[in-house]
View 1 (cartoon, rainbow, N blue to C red):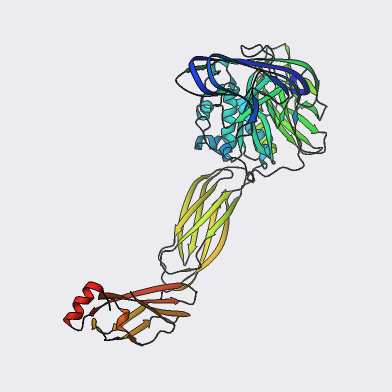
View 2 (view 1 turned 90 degrees about the vertical axis):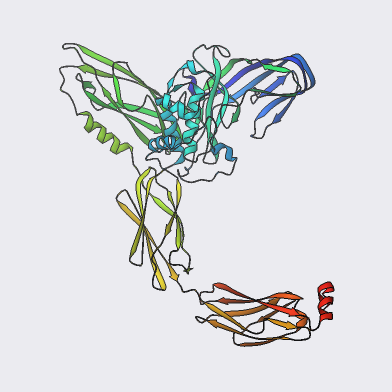
Length: 615
């Protein structure tokens, strides 16, 4: 039976470990994350929750030396994570409000342009976020080669992608990088999973395992790229905790003092007490375009998968074939998403080897569908049969059926000022790729006043938003300026029209006619003339001294008499400020400063003024 189809399982779980201490450790705290959901007993401690929502067993010791032992014993009733969806959110929609840590780069999760280029190419043609997640998980499952020599070797995702080999932790780190490069929140999950092979970890049937959770359709959905389960997780997966990447240990220790503390690898034993398989949710049929082929020949296998339920569902199709039959097109593990009661075709192109004359060949192919039926189908080989369609023709017909790309640019923002007073204003434009394919060699053109400025964008990844600034040089005539912004990509042109006013800035001339100094008891009498270069809607004149301030709402020739007491002893700065608003309601300010000295009327007053400033 297929363990990936286990929907319910009752499991006996036991974990234990030791902490060896050389010296004396004070205020030692032990965080043990080997605590699954279920009915659990443990030797000591309390259950708490960390900042990411993970449960852990906390053991605290005022002083500790020699050795600490811990154990956890659980009875787990596990259910498969089976998800269905009434509708699917678009690929470029972002509605996540949780921790930003699940979107960021880490030492192990890289989001470089190399990562983005691959993720954008893989999800080409995807309209929804769930479909993109399945495509990326499918790519990792098929492109990576499982190699146990990488167990315990933590490498960053860019290195993993270039090497294309690793274990479950590597598969998970690479998938997380791809997801985060598309702005899909994702996290690393550590736990245990059933294995048909006996490995040196845990027991004979379960091993330490890692997979991914991605935030899609308002939920954290599981994606296991190592075994090929996407938006679904069988009941023989046991989650212990999630984190930003795989650097978080199963057991953490914190203490004071100079003791040396060593954490031994935990021992985990998991036994299956009972289990049952999930009900059939999908149906599968398969047919060759040509069931008998010649040597060095090509044939197309069409597999039709039908969703028997009323909501969107996901499944995985696994294909097993003989080694000498070459798979030219298609994956050995194909992730599929199906609308309610719909059928989807999955295509495979095979190439036959050299066949000996006079012999008949049989190539058995097995198809296994998660949540569905198995199909066994045979391809016959006979060198006497005439060859079929060439590979190029088969590939063209398949790709036309499978990939439906949609290109789209959304102009998110165009910042054009309503009024400008400089002949080189700046406009800011924000554009976003809202299609399902990377857009390359994108051109932005801004046309205005018979002039043109251009900017090139090498590439715009799916969901990526870029901000661009343009300087509109050479404005000469005042008045309304019409602007046309064109975005040229993939043989089409989108545009938006904007306008602004290029206005003349008002000029103000302030003239002061009066003395440069006065004596005590002598008023300051002066004339103030304000000339404007254009008519304005509003004007205000403010005259300020260190001891006085006056505002005059009308600008004209002003005869002003200022009491001598309004000035300080010695030199005074008299500031004249004119504020005006033009016809566009823009406020301007102009200032002029005049120095007027207040002097003593006789030598006695001069001495008193310098000492006391009494007048």
